[in-house]
Length: 331
Ligand code: UT7
Image (cartoon, rainbow, N blue to C red):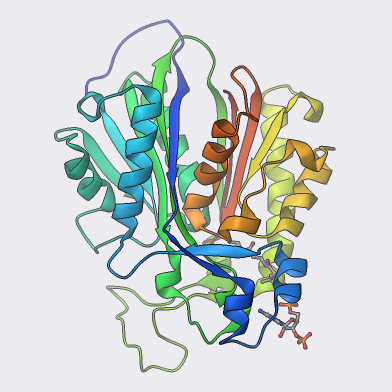
């Protein structure tokens, strides 16, 4: 990639989107057959009714590939035209190479830069922000941004406080350099001091010893504390995003939030004085797919015809780290 000197402003525009969900669907009633929960509890506390589960052997890279093929097709872009692939995931296929590199090869985009971003559920928004910087500086013209996860691989299916929340899925976006406005701004934050409220405390360097007390490759979450922090952080980032662009909350056409909990989504919508029919909600069908969630919701909104060209979209996410971020864009 080479830097390009130019006085003209360059924006990243969404040229196409795609998404993919594994075939298998697990409903709340299915879950209630093997863990002490109910459809009533899950739906009223989270808004979730069902989620998709990756088949045995089906990986984050597989989901990413299918979503990416659809996004490239929608954009009318050949994989060989890509300058960069940025993939948000916290459930990579392998320790290394990155899932982005595996995807690059499978798509036939050989030669372009490719790397993963791990920001847990904010992974896609982080990846989008990184890709936008590459385009704005003239370092890349055509970029594939993906959020893909197989989070159910690290769920303890006997732990009702977490296993009902997560699902698998992927979404992808092709960004192209344009002199017309696309992404207006992105905003990223993190608070590493809260790591133990939402984490999976194993890894290459600390080890994967599953027999240690409180260890094991599974998600741990202090749900109500995460909930409270998330609502505050998202309120603040919504204000920050509007202020940075000199916009009023009524200037936003669509809110496309991270799909963790309908009650968190409703709180952000309230902050924006936005009726729920201007908010894209997929949490009922997808559960929390971590970094897959925002691009899955975005693709669903575009393909259903709800979101139209020229409209102002606010994307936001919150996740482990803690991390949180937003992107404001004219579609
Ligand atoms: O994507 C990353 C960010 N993650 C999030 O944003 C998630 C944030 N947190 C949440 O969405 C919510 O806190 C949860 C959905 C995880 C939990 O909802 P809550 O309203 O905060 O419930 P709670 O944890 O305070 O639990 C209330 C009760 C407890 O019983 P007691 O102690 O009141 O008797 C739990 O044991 O609900 C019980 N409970 C369940 N009952 C039936 C917890 N999980 C379940 C379950 N089914 N699956």
